[in-house]
Image 1 (cartoon, rainbow, N blue to C red):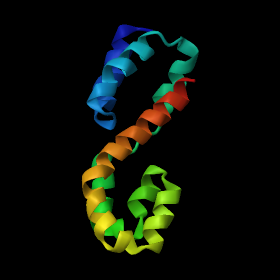
Image 2 (cartoon, one colour):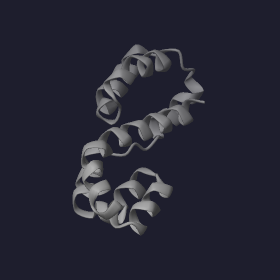
Image 3 (cartoon, helix red, strand yellow):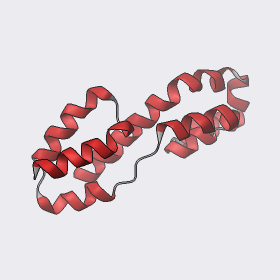
Image 4 (cartoon, one colour):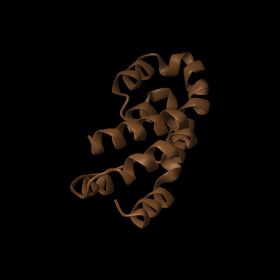
Length: 112
């Protein structure tokens, strides 16, 4: 793969991933064949900041977990009113990392 394309992808999308995943993503993109490049470019990643805002304002209803694709946890938070408020507060600190992990899963699904 062209190094400029990879560098552009990394520059535009690094905020969607954990910092420790970035070198592995770059290496995988450099070894990626041209046919799969379109799949990577069209992959939709969730914004971690948006997930945090949703978590702050609607975390008790599990909407933050539904947003990132954790349907089971979203239902659990909805039924327990955010774990009686405790789970809601814990997610304020965890939701951005969970969003980045889900984005990594989406990236891996796009390249395989």
